[in-house]
Image (cartoon, rainbow, N blue to C red):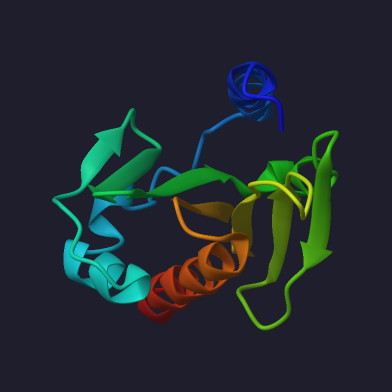
Amino acid sequence: MNSMVLPHFIVGLFCILAGLGARTAAAQAAPCSILSSAQVSVAVGVSVGAAQPIATTGCSWSAPHIIVTLSLWDGSKWDKMKTGLPGTTVTAVAGLGDDAFLSTLGRPTEKQFATLSVKKGNTAYLFKVYGPSVSDQTSMEKALAGSVLAKL
């Protein structure tokens, strides 16, 4: 992906996601309390720092060369979320929550980014691991989802 296109894509992605609504059920736990730094470290194979809130609907953990995020979304927007953005490949993922899919951005010959989205009840959980290869991102995101779902 052209280095000038990526920043514009990321801004556009955030605008679209904001339009979908980041509201969650009032009873939903704060995102940073859903996963511990130890659970994230195990899933990604490196020691991450303390959780850092992203507004009221997300959380991030970081280590050198890796960033992990968890965002909570209103599950009523699920069908819109599954349509994907231009340039993404959406693939169903079985065995996680009530429904799950993987969105992959980028061509296989270039750097790719994967996001795992899992719906459980009225909440959608979006897992992103930035840094490793897309296959490693996917396996790490599935491990993170498994940790969250085990607590629900």
